[in-house]
Structures are given as C-alpha cells and as structure tokens.
Length: 214
Image (cartoon, rainbow, N blue to C red; front, side, top):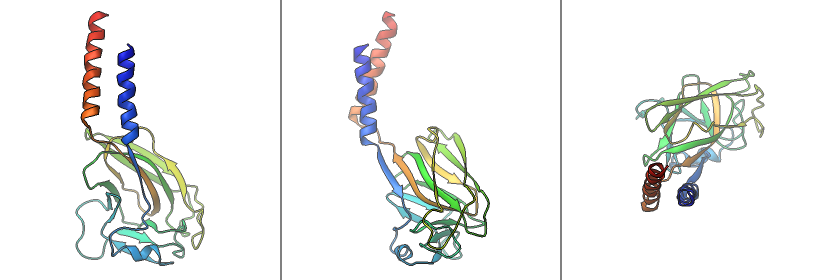
C-alpha cells in the first residue's frame, strides 16, 4: 500500500508541476491587432485572435474578408464595458470559441465577464460549453450583476470560476451574444512523458497485485 501511495503521489505531483497556466488578456496578438491595445475608445472587428498558443474565433470557418464577426475593444471605448485594457466585445450576432493551436487539452479555470455596454443595464446570463476529449459536453451559466459604467471605468468586469468539470477540454465555446469577455485563464494539460507512463504502468501493476492478494 505504501508503494501504491507513493506512485499515486508521484503521478499527481508531476501533473501539477508541469501544468502550465496561461491567461488570454486580448491585449496583444497578431501584428495587425496590436494597435487596438493602446488606442483608447476604439473597437475593431477581427476574424480571429491568437495569443499564447490559443485561438479565439467565432463558430465555423474563419472569414477571409470583412465584415468579420469578432469584436475587439480598446480601453475606454465609450459606452462599452471597460476593464482599463482591451477585451473581446461579443456583438449581437457573435459566437465565441477557443482552442489550443497545438491540439493540447486544457482546463478552463476562470474568466472576467461584463455586460456589452451601458445600453444593456440588466444582468446577463452567459452560457459556456466545454467539449471534453471524449466528445461529451459540460455546461455552466454565469450571471453578471447588470452594473456597467463604460468609459474609463475599471470595475465593469466580474471574475467567474469554471466548475471542476471543465477539465481536459479540447474546445471551450459560448453561443451567448452581446457581452464582454477578458482575462480567460486556462491550464494546459501536460502530455504524457516517460515518467507519467511509467507511473501509470506501475500503478496498474501494484493495483492488480493488491487485488490478487486481497
């Protein structure tokens, strides 16, 4: 039993040690997007957004010509919700999905959400769907407080934490429209290495022997 406990501890310690946490801040990205992060009061429509190895885009194929369907708002963008930095601004006909460009699985950890603008002074229910590696789906609804100042406000966004079921995802998406999103925090699931494979193999061997002698 001591060997079993040691192997289990070794495996989960490895997983925690090598899991990389990334934050999609929507302030930098492809060269043609970077000016938006420094231009106050600006909003542009973009086909997609790449940051720290993850792509954010609307559902479906990437459009190759305008009008695009993903809004990127700079700080202090008039009536739009404000976080003091650039953020995604999901319009009335927008959808949103994010995935690893390298095909890695990831955990959805947290996200900052706000109403779309001062025109929508009501709580907003924002639904997310996580697609697991198995193809199954998990769901969660977050509800904002309905308070939005816009302009140069720094408190329009609220932090929300994803439930533990949003683990080992291949895709995170939302069909909700007319809201704002920033600081999406993800944890990349490490790929198996020789150490992890060995740990799992030893765990299986010890488990079988334990059952045989019990």
